[in-house]
Each structure stands twice: as C-alpha cells, then as structure tokens.
Length: 312
Image 1 (cartoon, rainbow, N blue to C red):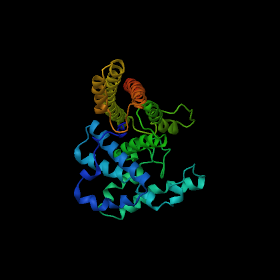
Image 2: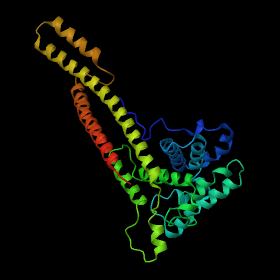
Image 3: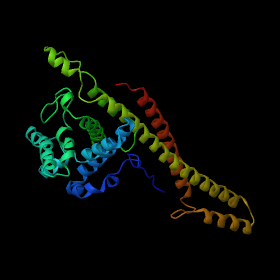
Image 4: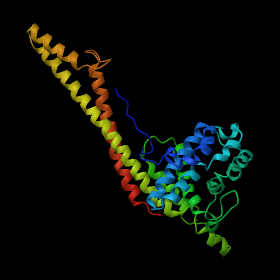
C-alpha cells in the first residue's frame, strides 16, 4: 500500500535558503544545533514569515523577523546537552540554566557584526507583554514588535512539538491556549499599576490572529493531501473489486478457456505482493483506510469552522 505523504507545515513556507545570500555564511552555525532545536528554529522562522505576510508587513521587516526567528534559540548551543536533550521535566536549577539561552544567544549575535541586527530574536522572545517573561521582565512598550511576533510562533510550535501533532485535528485546542496568553488575567491584583500591566496579556493578539489564518492554510493543505490519498485508495478499491468480479466469473463458468481468461485478467490487475489468496484482505484494508481518511477530512473541516469562530 502506497504510504500517505504529508508534512505538518505547508510547503509554501518561506525557506531559510531563500533569504539574502550575504548572511548565509553566518547562519551555518545553526547546523551545530541538535536536530530537535534546529527543526524548531526552522519552523518558527517559517511561521514568522507567513504571519508577517498576513499582517501585510513590508518585505524588509519580514526578512528581518524571519532571520531573527531562525536565530531565536541560538543560545542553546551553549547550554549543556544533558539539559537541552533531557526527556523529562527540568529541575528548578536546570530551568534557570536553560533560561540563560536568551542572554547567551544575544551575546553571540552581538559579537558577530552580521548577526547583530537580529539579536532581538534571542534577546526578547521569552519576554511577555505583561512583564512576566524573562530574562528582564520587560513590558509591551519595551519589547520590539519583531519579538512579539516571534513569541507567538515560538509558543505555537513548542506546543505542537510537545504534543507530537501529526495532523491538524484538534489543533484548535492549541490555539485556545494561546488565546489565554493574549487575554487579560482574571486574577485580582491590588496595585493599580500592576493591574494595568496585567491587562496587556502575555502575547500580542494581532500576530495571533494572523497565526489563525496560517493554521487554516495548513489545515487546508492537509485536507488536499488526504484527498489526494483518498483518490489513490478509491482507485485501488476499484481495481480490486474488478479482480473480485473476475474471480466470481471464473468460478461460475464451466469453460476452461473462459476460466483461464479471467484468471489471466486477475493476474494482470494484481500489484506487487498481491495474489488470489490475499487480495480480499488487501481490499478490506483499503476500504478501512478510506473510512478513516474520510472521517479525518470531516474533522479537519470542523477544525476550520472552530478556528474561524475563535476570538481574541
């Protein structure tokens, strides 16, 4: 059975290799990151570029954000591997070390004249608009807009990766969690100044709304991939049902020549690994796969309806 081919993110993403060639040599260092962090960095950069497109940012600012997003976790080069690759939850001490990737990444960029303009990615991507982020606890007016966009993409991909999403079914739950980060806290805060800061939320709702559109695009892309596979499955079912029809005619005819004719027809229709003994099982597997894929398409369309109703 031909395997279904599908990438979680749309292939229409802006690719790092399409960026300005003058900075490519300086981005080679990203190859030194572990594969998990490197893939995450690529995902964030791609998401940032598409968010910027939906926000109608100019091309120069978009490219800046994409590169800064690509470099946002560069500081993890200097974090011990036993911490960055730890499968379980980090201890408090390990978490404090992990948090230093922001300042380490900032310093790395500042030491390279070509990367210096993009130091906002590593330096600010964990800052929160309400002042609850790190490393400096900055608030909205002090956080560059580029970093506000990067944080949205970073949070989204981190959740997607953690939950090991392979489909956009139930992806609206992830977006709902991001909405909570964009809404004011319901906690009562005594000091008016703190309450005012809390109202800002953690992430900017504007790039979050643009992310919704990106996710809808990716969901539609997944639907198109599944539909292509459904068409393949339907062709296989049609072929094997023809085999079944030939077999029935072969078993009901009394003429040896006619039997040989239908038997030869069956052999011509068999694909690699199929034969008269196992084709009915293969047919059943295709029919089951068709039901599963059609159900998935229905659920994906439902996800789009949910996402379109989400409000920030």
